[in-house]
Length: 522
Picture 1: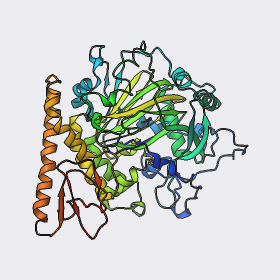
Picture 2 (picture 1 turned 180 degrees about the vertical axis):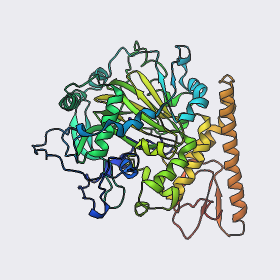
Picture 3 (picture 1 turned 30 degrees about the horizontal axis):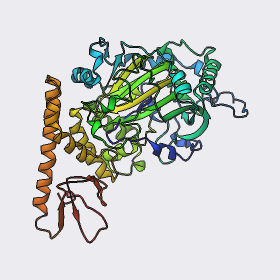
Picture 4 (picture 1 turned 180 degrees about the horizontal axis):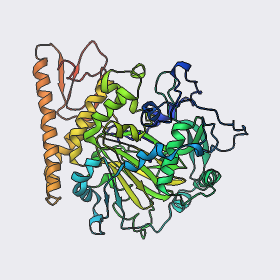
């Protein structure tokens, strides 16, 4: 999960490799704002609410930038409505009011078991949506050496991202994932550093607070800026060398999802981005759109390069955030579904950028973190998150899950079924497998308060699942249907009506060519 501008970047429980993002059909052409919708004055930032979200107002035109042959995308080549140097910094004073998320410094002893440590801090940290963990161990092998030597011939294809806020209606909906070019990590670093140096006369050591304000100036007032970045790249930059302290620890993302306390160990097939790590290679102002971590916990490690700024909305405020997006960001005509499910559906496309100032104005809690190399950022279930890069950097992300995520998983299943989407994670199958393995697990895991919470969540979720099936069978008795109970299920089946993954039981009906879940009538 790369970093995040806000592009609330909901790990969803049902999150996959985001191949759908590749289906972006190119960048939409710029569309002028109708005269009747133009604002005559945007000097008062506090009252120009719509500017924060998606509207770029028109002021005196700046001198046009001379067009040149395309060589490499650069955020400096933009045609702005007014020069950034002429903007008042007071317009962005709200940035200084965003509170920081918790930062944890585990000892080497605490660092030995990542899932036990996350369980220890989860009660406090989850209230903020995101948190930062500073690693007490370093890596003896640079990530560039891992990618160039341990993975010989490593290259990746970049994507292009426009630097502006969309108006979010049918006439102006930005596509973010037009294909770029192929790079080695060294060639991309050279290109990215040149782009930063052209703008600021130096490619590094920029103060994070300064870059944050520069980013939002660019997003609000620019129109044609573009950045290039690598997203969802298969692989890992953790070294496989035995004498590498961090690479040989359990925090290595090639190991972490399959640890004994992680529920994802029970998934048979590998799922890139969920059970297998992915790389994210960015440049100045490369940003992560609003993204949701629905059920799993997402963890991101900063291998090298410039810092990243993250924003997070905690899970307890997710509905409040979605209502804000519904009423003040999206035009109803672009929502395929009514209500919050329609908002959730559009957010899943991961192309939404929202200024945190809007959240502050409407009392939606939002927190931020500045992630430096050697630091982990963890996003918790149901949290929306997003952010941007301060320059060239290389990060890596993967998911993991502990027992506490099962209630979130049940909610995610219902939401995906309402939208007719097939979830990536077979929730029922995973829950049943975890419940059946409890007797064996309890003989190996020493008891602690966090383990008892996980145990209670698994047992409660499993009981609720069986109770819902029992109720559904009782309601269906009056129908003459062929009900097949999978006493020894071999896998999950997809409901032909709602795309739900059925594992415990399903209905066979002559009217449909495929299984039907039991929950349509109940």
